[in-house]
Length: 110
Image 1 (cartoon, rainbow, N blue to C red):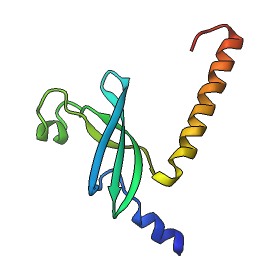
Image 2 (cartoon, rainbow, N blue to C red; image 1 turned 90 degrees about the vertical axis):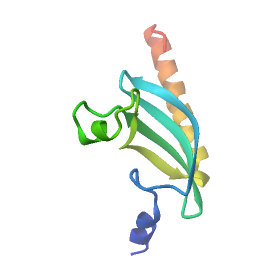
Image 3 (tube, helix red, strand yellow; image 1 turned 45 degrees about the vertical axis):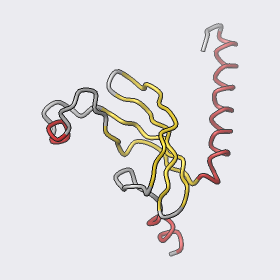
Image 4 (cartoon, rainbow, N blue to C red; image 1 turned 180 degrees about the horizontal axis):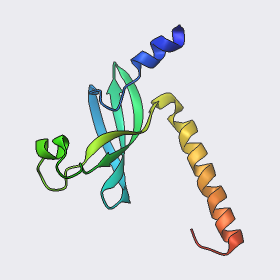
């Protein structure tokens, strides 16, 4: 029961945060990027890594946002309370280091 309450209080991809700060972005492919943001939702600070994509031509979102280069948020991503962000970042760094070691052993550059 307690888990349900906590889950209901987490920000969702389509929810409006009280405030947000764009930290940066990384190009994913030709039509999408991953944006890294700090969000405040219900008074709590979160780290959000979310895919933003250009809408498909002819879609309702494309008609609602005709400006060139518009990219909207998707449900693809991770939102984590800031107190756990360091743990996530450490694990990402560990994964990157292991990938570098594997590619060095295989003789390819990462």
